[in-house]
Length: 378
Image (cartoon, rainbow, N blue to C red):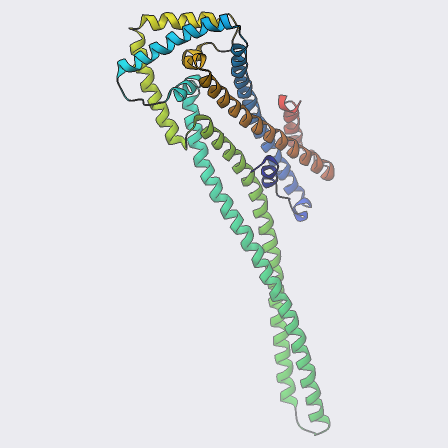
C-alpha cells in the first residue's frame, strides 16, 4: 500500500447531514485535532530516530573516506578485537542464542528495548482490537445500507399497490352505481363493505409507508454514525499497523513474543560476555585502542564498532550494516512523510470546517493554539 492509498483509506467523507449539525461538526473538529496531536508526537519520535540513523550512516561514510594508512591502523585493531571475540565464543563453548547483528542492534537500543517490547505487545493487542472494531463497523454500515435499500423498494411497491387498489375501488363503485341506478338493486350493505375495505386498506398502506419512512431515516442516521466511527477506527488502524510493522522490521521479528525472546537471549549473552570480559585483558586493551583510534575522527558513536568490528575488517560486512541502516532510514522517511501529510490534510480539513461553520469555541481555540505551537507545525 503506497502513501497516497494509505491516506485515502484513513479519511472517509462526512455526510451533509452531519455538517448541518453544529454539535457533530464541533466533535468532528475536536477528533481531527486529537489525531493531529497524536500524529505530531509520532512525527517527533520518528525525526529523532531518523537523525540517529543518519548519524550512523555519516560515521560509515567518514570511515570509508579515511586514508589507507589510518584505516589500516583501525583495521588492525578491529581485527584483534574480532579475533578475541571469536576466542571468547569458543571459550564459552555454547550454542549461539542470538546473532551478532541482533546483539549489536539490541545493544544500541538496550535502554529502550523493554519499553519497545511492551509497546509492541500493546500495539499488537490494540491492532487486533481495532481490526475487529473496523470489521464490525464495516458490517454495520453495509447492513444499514442494504436495510435502507430494502425499505425504499418496499415504499415503491406500496405506492404501486395503492394505485392498484384505488383503481379497483373506482371499478367497484362504477359497478355498484350501475346495479343501483340502472338495475334498481339494493347495494347499501355492499357500499358499506366496499368503503370499509377501502378505508382499511388505505390506513394500512399509509401506516406501513409512514413506518418505513421513519425506518429509512433511522437507517441513514445509523449508517452515517457508523461511517464517522469507521473513519476514526481506520485512522487508528493505519497508525498502529505502521508502528507494528516498523517495530517488527526494525528488530527482524514476527511478533512481540519473538522480540521478548531475543531480549531474554540478549540478557543471557550479556552476562556470559561480561563474565569472560573480566578475565580477558587483551580484549579490553584492543577495545580501548580501537575506541581511541575512532575518537580521533569525531564519530557519533564509537562504541558501537566494538560489537561490529568485523565490519571494519570485511567490506562485505560493512556493506550489510550500511544497507540495514539505509533500509531503516527509508522506512522512517516514509513514516515521516505519511504523518506530515496526515497532519496537513487534517489541519486543512479543520480550517475548512472552521471557516465554513464559523465555530470557534474556547476549547477548539485552545487546541488549535497548542497545535500551532508544535515544532512540527512551524
